Length: 502
Ligand SMILES: CC(=O)N[C@H]1[C@@H](OP(=O)(O)OP(=O)(O)OC[C@H]2O[C@@H](n3ccc(=O)[nH]c3=O)[C@H](O)[C@@H]2O)O[C@H](CO)[C@@H](O)[C@@H]1O[C@H](C)C(=O)N[C@@H](C)C(=O)N[C@H](CCC(=O)O)C(=O)O
Ligand SMILES: Nc1ncnc2c1ncn2[C@@H]1O[C@H](COP(=O)(O)OP(=O)(O)OP(=O)(O)O)[C@@H](O)[C@H]1O
Ligand SMILES: N[C@H](CCC[C@H](N)C(=O)O)C(=O)O
Ligand SMILES: [Mg+2]
Image 1: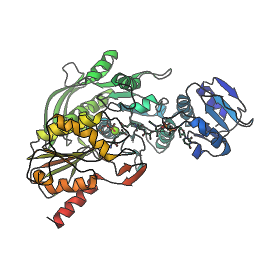
Image 2: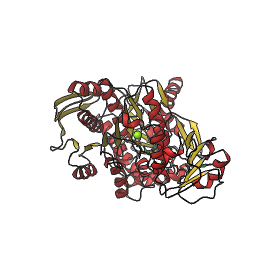
Image 3: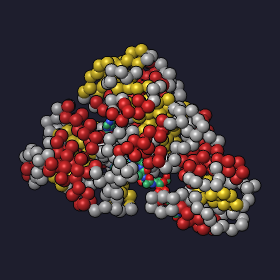
């Protein structure tokens, strides 16, 4: 594509150099640039792309988009813009021929439930004979193509490229988890959303966002009209106070929840070990929902997904069948088979609210003993740590405090932030014998593999073990290194060891 065809999207403040040059590809990382590329210098959290412009030029960049004035060779076009991330999103949309305009796009935002709802919406679309692609925390995928997801929401350039590829492979719809970081960083600025979903908002990422208002403001951007475009149809869970507030600003929203005024409203439900059954009133008539998923929070997720079905004008049968078809979401209350007569569940709860919801669900199933093994991620919101400690102390009979992804932090220091929460609810540290004898309290075992081993050895018939925080992740990040680690595999290995040495 010619640079001249991209320039109008960039809204340049200043321009120098050749416009009639052919652009082979777009880049935001100097290390990938090849001859004829257009490099975007993005200011970042760790460094600043402007520092690598010389490297990009050295690798053959034909043009550079930057926020600051640059001193470039005559042969390289220089374009200065106000917001380089926004310019990247707009240019990528044009470069890949605006793939999302030709697809039905459902964006899902909120603190918890996005991944689960993305699987449910994918199933609704499939039941309606559509061909959905999905981007989110677990993977970026369509049909037999599946790519690892370095971020929940990809950078705009990667997202537009993926959408184009999926569309060319036959996809007609895209279900996207949209993180607050992505909204703040313009990663979805070039996407045409048809439906936007709000799940809930509870404390998370307050290392990145100034406060809850700032976090809410970022999430709310998904519901606004894009530059010159049409605002998406909003689907909002009004049982959540921030959802109710957002719905107050969007009178056309399809509201959902237990709330009597919700347009997609729960009439009655049964939530148990066998799953969920619910009667739901919608503007299209009454639905009978059945789902093998566990817990009241998944009932909320089902209501949001059913409301998306209403927003997309799907039939009653398509909505009911689609939702019933999702039997498992990887790493979300995912059971691990065993012959101990115990329930072992791997879950992605890594916020206070998610851990509370997951433990309340398991407690309502009346286990003999409820054990919760968890840690907290390093280089992330420290405020979550004592809250997760308190929740585990209050709801589990035994908490095993371990490590999540320590990243560049000292695992012991992360644990030291968690323990005051447990002590706030009068939980004491136990020695292994006390834990084996069934005492209530907590153990500290920083090595997650060892912690899983100890937890499995403690299990008796009727007990439940929740291994929380890492869900589908098949790695642990220690320092800057990513090592293979999968809670599900670790549990199976610990079960095998217990069999060998009972
Ligand atoms: C804090 C944050 O969100 N950072 C994201 C951001 O990186 P950044 O731009 O700040 O990166 P940077 O390292 O400072 O570099 C600045 C620029 O210099 C460039 N560079 C750098 C080095 C070099 O040699 N040459 C070069 O050109 C980089 O390519 C970049 O363009 O943009 C990158 C590209 O999109 C993201 O991968 C990266 O996510 C990091 C890895 C991250 O950990 N993000 C987390 C916090 C995140 O985004 N999480 C959300 C929500 C998760 C959830 O709750 O589900 C997500 O969507 O995943
Ligand atoms: N509606 C909900 N409300 C509260 N907690 C939930 C809800 N749905 C799921 N959870 C809990 O939160 C965890 C994460 O759920 P899910 O992956 O669906 O959400 P997410 O918004 O995609 O999270 P993330 O931002 O971490 O990717 C689950 O493992 C479960 O413990
Ligand atoms: N997308 C979230 C996931 C956190 C998962 C947890 N395992 C951790 O590493 O803290 C984040 O990057 O904050
Ligand atoms: Mg997710």
